[in-house]
Length: 232
Ligand SMILES: N[C@@H](CCC(=O)N[C@@H](CS)C(=O)NCC(=O)O)C(=O)O
Image 1 (cartoon, rainbow, N blue to C red):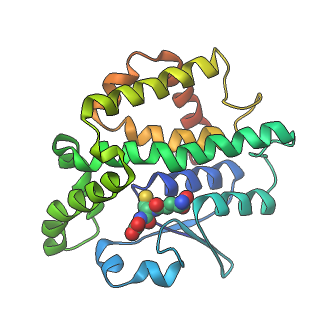
Image 2: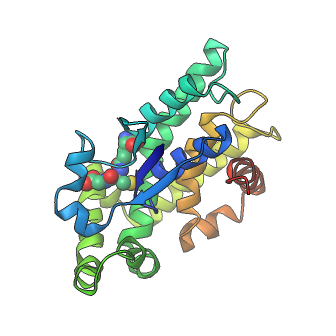
């Protein structure tokens, strides 16, 4: 039995779900609520107290990067990490850039800007009771802002954040240059990791506006989405 402990909205949980989908692994998801989190559920699940955590036949793995490497070893086909050492290194760089840099853009845009938070914050408490829902409305944007301010992005004016993102889109467009995938000639973990973060950015009005100018990125995102959806 394979269980993914998740926050439905987390890009890291989305990344793992998509890898499981591509590899054809049957799994169930268990949503961790805000109340569970307040009661210390995350600490029970993983040493870093973060999600995703994958339980596979009783073995628990935390951290999306470790989970994806584990899945690659356990279910080698179709491969998502190329055999070529330089391509492997590129996949690693893209994945790390997505997880450690792009993540803070999506977090800041979705949860700290009031017009986006209005849509996304209620989603974070959708499995919680009325009191937690009320607390989440104030506490979630505050906690996210504290994180993005500590990281740095949250201290930048919005115009600079949009300019940074525009540069990222521009560079992805240039890098793809008409190619279908970020690394080599097939879908890899690089595509899934970058997609998972940008899909969250695309869920904000700023992300939508910026993406309008980058057909290459939008087409690539549609391709990755299509290739990594659950098979029904
Ligand atoms: N590097 C980790 C990052 C995971 C992560 O930051 N997860 C967030 C949700 S998007 C989380 O669990 N945050 C809870 C917390 O920090 O208390 C991974 O790749 O899995």
